[in-house]
Length: 414
Image (cartoon, rainbow, N blue to C red; front, side, top):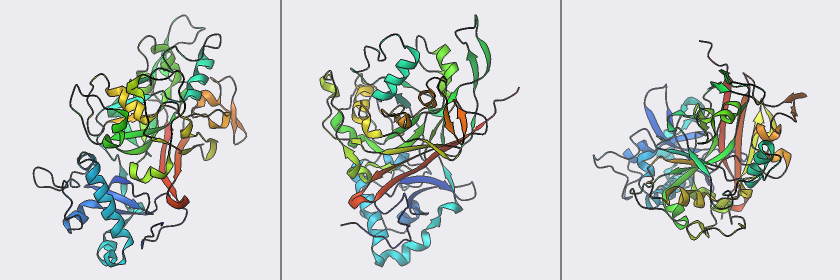
């Protein structure tokens, strides 16, 4: 049976009682508060803990007797593990559905428009994968039209790279056009300046809660024991800088200038009804990558450029599952840390209107796409990109992720 809440939540809201995503906000830019979102309201979890609403849930007090919600970051709560996550979610659902709690809880609610939304986690490490078959085939065809689109290793392992955790920013943060070395095939030597081929990558990210010791790997079956929740990701990419620098070690300055994530971390528990089995993989994967957990997800992404929808990528078509990504990035004994973020890589489907990057939508700039009656290839200064996503919850309800948005600012002139 679908639960109902006493909070005034619109039927078209991303944030129904079945979602309850977590975030961090500030009132007037000073103190930071860990909150849960319901409709257009946020509820501070430290205030609930102080009032005794979480009494009886073990694990919510840190070694210095402070509530895990008092740190102004989700990290301490994320480190408590699935048992505590489940107990807190169950308690929050009761508080927001049972009328007997309304008189005490309602005064703690604040309108989301009255607070400043901040980066929800302290990012430890950041790994980005390359897990969409359609995206990989498109990119291969664009850059290697006379050879195989996929590299020989692509179907054997989830390819990824380590990014820069310090440049991950929350949705709404402007993105300054990066500068770097660029060299076209027609040039004899590289030049320096602002990227001319600034791009997006519509992705889904997974936030690690429970850490591991160095030397221990994590299996695909342990995915939900370590991953706290899901965010949207825009992996901004300077394609001309990337094309010149990436041989032989891969992405560097073409990626590290900024990566945007959505402000709300949707817990895995909210996405149970969106779970689907992963694709049939051919050839068969090595044993450590076998994944029978059905933690692939049917998420519908939407990308807008200056308000116009330009793509609707389907996450369910991803070739490599998040469980396989987690298993692969730890199989060598690399440890997990609370706050680690790993992203899916660009989400693209088989149709042109399902491509998750401008590189694909414009086929490397050779086949412009049209929006608002204008032909476009890559991003101009002043462009605003917004990525949204939804999933199906209990009884057909909607689970939303909010948005990850960013406006392009001109490159520095100094």
